[in-house]
Image (cartoon, rainbow, N blue to C red):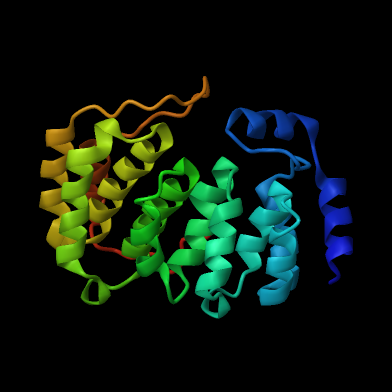
Length: 235
């Protein structure tokens, strides 16, 4: 499909009430306010398309950018592509989900994520931690650098309470992901979570809450879900 056809279709799916909700959750203009279920209709039709994904992403329209992540051919994404994507990922749904999904399933996820987490730009650091969370959820433990993950947990213990607002949320998410998906580090993640204590994040007046890491990991354990990997992080 041509880019303009898809943009016209996206515009037709836009809903003002959805747009208001997304604005409250940190999605930046321009965008139409398209429900994810509508984006998935288009995704099902296109499946994967590296070129079209990049064209959609660089419209800077948040709906198109989200769709770009769904149809991206992750293994074809270059480091340069991903660096360009993360720089433009100023909307919360794009830096917290779209870019991390594509990066985690690319060939450069860990390398780029460990660079991004040290960025002074909040949206880039968020993308870094979210990418790391995605990586531990999909990669077999034998393909993970366990000592590096331990170091990252220690870094969070040291830095979380002085980090930027949404970075704290995604650091907490990383602890949950490690504790839930990496059996060898479940106990260690719980210890770090206990040492950290309550994680405070300004959620901009939305109903969203910061999950308690130990409570979340325990729920996973109670369902015998520790160490069970996902096929994909995209949703």
